[in-house]
Length: 459
Image (cartoon, rainbow, N blue to C red; front, side, top):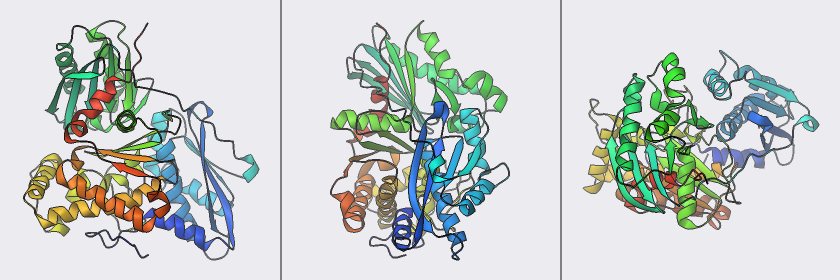
């Protein structure tokens, strides 16, 4: 596989965007159609159509590897508990074997069962049996009236803003360690303290909006890496309703809206740009994605891009949590910076936390260290190819990046290299898609301000 823009510190990088293109080209004359559909709660369905080599022509393993990556991608983009494969019984049955308890994708199966509280299944069927797409897209956010609290729960720091009629009157950022604490009281008090501080800066609290990594249904926490060390028993008893419980402490009947931090990134971008068809990417402790569709709606998809593969190389770094290779978390987060540091000639003290290691690299970047610049150059190449891959699933006019990894000159290098990838490798996308990076202040506190606009005030 030849790249027109190389990932400087990662010569083995195999972008899935190019894999998709090569598969389409190789199967144009003598391939067969295949459809992947994912069903989630309330019968919502999202599908993806592609082509593979014909069954029985010696490409069965190649077909499976490709389709498995696409199933994995669609599953974490849209979310769901049922995978439907039509067009190849051979591939479908291998997917069924992989996506089962104890199978190759055991993690994905159990995660989705926890989110949707139902058994996971893979169905192999004929083309005419594939259900039609059914959308849950709905408008959310952009409410700026009244006195609002916006809270952004990150893995390394928490941000809160007091917002009055759309203007931030107070913002603060506090370092915390939610991923290493097993006592949910630590998380509860941290969230409550932040919100009480913001409340003290306003005459009253009319609404609360929360941006947080994880999966949320009806403002309840279904899965979130912030509570990684909390036991399942404590999670069910003390974590699931945590944001609702905190809101009650600030006053009865205060409306609260909790959204995935990636969706809030996209919302912040859409508000700032006064545009739609926005894909937002937050590069921080992990990679968070969010999307505002061409009609200005939130889709209801998971948008958990941290688990979406972007690298087809089987020797790519494995994510410790999911046990899978080539996934976004190792390419667009502080983990990516740490992963690339040795190749850049930078030795990081293992006693430092991931956030502290990132700060070391950012400090070297300010000093003009060539290795540090090469790290951001490499992540930029990753990102350009990833944007092309994400466009397989999203209709994109604007891409906005936020998060601590994008702070400073490194973020500028990252975006320049991503743009070069689009210009040279995907000119049809380059003609349409605009890349954006907000100013430093917006980048660091913009999500908590956008979060404040999530809930609609009760009349």
